[in-house]
Image (cartoon, rainbow, N blue to C red; front, side, top):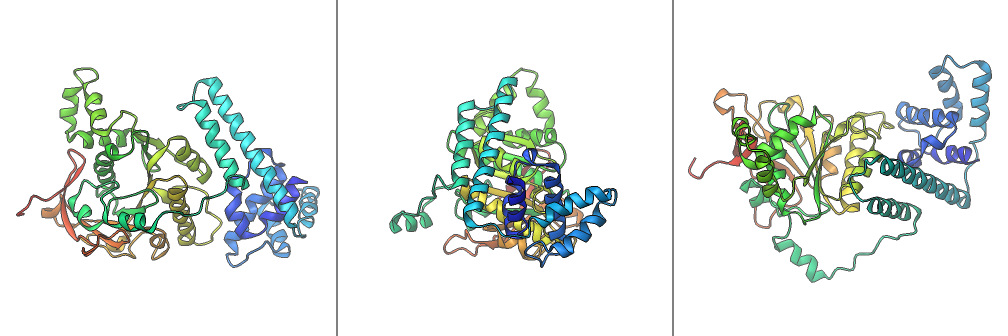
Length: 419
């Protein structure tokens, strides 16, 4: 019964995109799982369809699974005939409640297994409470709070200096400090220093966080060992050779690093290659993130239901921005500047890879790292903010500033005055 009603609900595109990643697929019948997977494929093939049209879907399903016997295909058709009816509100609520409880049970069982194996990084009680809070919010037991801030407090936020500041003065001069709920895109061409920029800024921001909050660096490109070296290098402003000299005395290097960022485990780099949005959200919850760096967010799985890449990415960036509000954190997502921005010092707003407006609409600011192809400007980078909703009162909002790229210490620094 649960499987049939679930198919009746998720045959609607809006429900499929919103709920599919929360479904505990391990508890479903394999036929239900196969049909749900093909619902996503169907919405990709027919982006204008808001609901599964069985007259269109059934022939396509047969084409997508040519190895099915006639008997097996008829079994699937029997299931599909049962989903033509709509679900009443009472049944819908009950099924969604069952789903939330199934997900809660599955997640708690996984936590228990990890606890037994000694694989939990945080106390079991904290993780269980986080799962219960997520369940209560999903099930509507824990209601969202209405905004009861005084207008005086809100206006004061516009002029005070509370929040996280950048290492680069050109950004601090044109943007107010970053605060929970802010979400920005940091874009650059390949091999022009995006990782070094992130290392430079995040190591400067780390010690500005509340003592119990962390920076979660979600790595979707390359290996995490390379990033960890860059992070420690940037925090200390040391070359590799200088770092090698320090490790001759055991523990000294990491002691110096911990002093700069606040704690040895303050910046947590986690590989998420092949991860789904649900798994990513679980990491945000588990690591008490004050800043989440999505590097590269475009590669996270979970929004393949859209037929066009730009539409899928727009949904992904909206999802990431919503996590900033839900988990009271700052979000930074890296993206690539498209080929048309190659060699430009100040690429324009629409020069993000695979997006002219979609990604841009979901962010508070878009920071572009421009670079010239001239050899004399090899170590120059050009910082601009073609979108800046965090603009300081009285500033232009867009620095259009040349800065120094120091790859030997993984730093971006302002040019000395007078240059």
